[in-house]
Length: 112
Image (cartoon, rainbow, N blue to C red; front, side, top):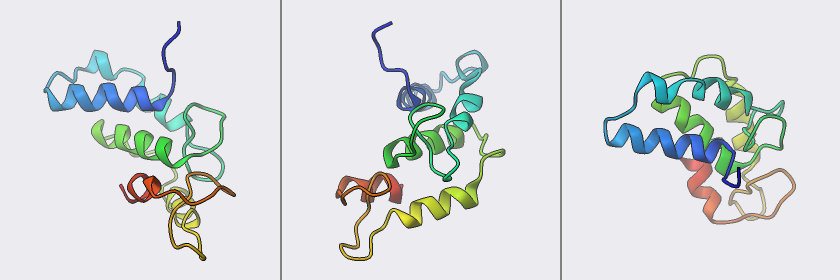
């Protein structure tokens, strides 16, 4: 009840299970559908369905889908456009969300 409830947890659970070779169909059940529902109208991914797209969440959602080999059904072209628009012209770095300041950590999240 008091834990995190977003796609970061989904990605973390899947990544650890995959690394330790314990990723089962039972553990993966519903994860791909949840990650897909996190994609926004902009093309990025929010932390949970219906929220603003964010660089870190976009990485986690896409990485979770890649681990599951379930990237079908998402708008990859829209995601590519969204990520490209996060790189600003003046600083050259990446912002995590639209109309926010550049932060060096997003070079990892968007670059990943």
